[in-house]
Length: 386
Figure 1 (cartoon, rainbow, N blue to C red):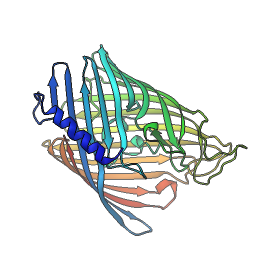
Figure 2 (cartoon, one colour):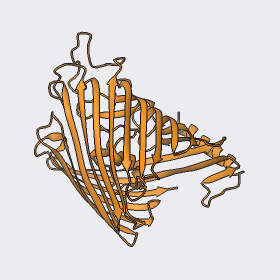
Figure 3 (cartoon, helix red, strand yellow):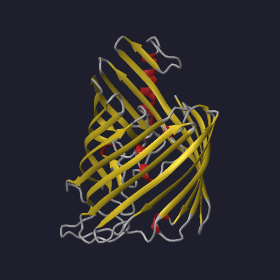
Figure 4 (cartoon, rainbow, N blue to C red):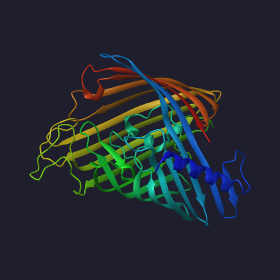
C-alpha cells in the first residue's frame, strides 16, 4: 500500500466522522449510539548521535515513530483497530503494520482479541513507547533480543480479584529474523522472505497488591502502586522456510542461522508513588539452531542462553520535570563478555505524556559482547500524542 493511498483513506474517514457529533473535546472520538469512530496517533521526532570509542561520530534526525490509527465499532461489545507506522519503513515497504485486530469485550473481566496485537511478555515491551522514561527501550523490551513484537493470532486478557490480578495469554504464528547476532521475534504481518515461522504460545500474570497499575512509566498521581509479574512463552519452527540450511543439514551463511526453537521466562516488578517511578525486569531465552553444532554470533555449539536485566527509575518534580537513570545488561553464550548500558536523562512534560520532550544519554560498554567496544549515545526526542 502506498503512502498516498493511506493519506486519502484517512481523509475519507475524517470526512465521514465530521458528520457525527463529537462526544469528547479535541475532535478525536465521534459517536452515534453504539457506533463510534476514533482517530489518533503519535509523532516522535528524534535526533540521535552515536560516538563510538574507536570510530567517527555519526548523527541523524528522523521520525522515530509516525503512527496514525483508526479505531471503531458498529456493534455493541465489538471493536476494531488499525495502526501503522510510516516512520519505521524498511526496503520497499513504505509502512510497517502495528495493531490490526478486532476484539470482543462482552464477557465480564475478559476480552478476546483476534489479529496482530501485543504478545503478553515483558513489562518493558508492554509499556507503550509513548509512556517510556527513556527515549529508547532497554534490552528487556527490545524485540531484537528475545521479546516478541506484536504477533498475529488469538489473544486473551483479563482481570480478577477486584483488579488486583491481571493476566494475558496468546496463541500465534510467530516469525524470527534468522540473523545470528540477535534473537528477533518479528510479526508475520511484516515478514521478510527469509523469516523462520512457527507457532508460539505464551502467558503472563501480574499481581497488584495496592490496586491495579497501568503499563505506564512516570508518577503523576502520587499514589502508592506496586506490581509483580511473571511470564513465559515457547516458539517452535514449522520447518517450512529454513533458507540458510541445505538439504544435508549444513549452514549456508556465516551471518544467518535458521532457528529451531525458543523458550523464554520473565520476572518483573514496578513501583509508583511519592513522585518515584521504578521498574526492574529479568528475562532469559534459550534458543537452538536448526543446524547442529552451529557457531556464530550469539550461538555456540548450536544454542545460546540470552539473558537481559534492567533497573530504571525516575523522580518527578511538580509533575512537569522528571530526572531518570537506569542500568541494563545483556549476556549470551556467544559473547566474550557482558554488554552493559548506563543511562541518564531528563523529561519535560507540557501535557503529561501527550506533549513531552526527552533527553537520554546512554553509555554502552562491550557492544554485542565484544570487550572494549564502547559507544556513547545521545537521544533527543519530541513527542505529540493525539
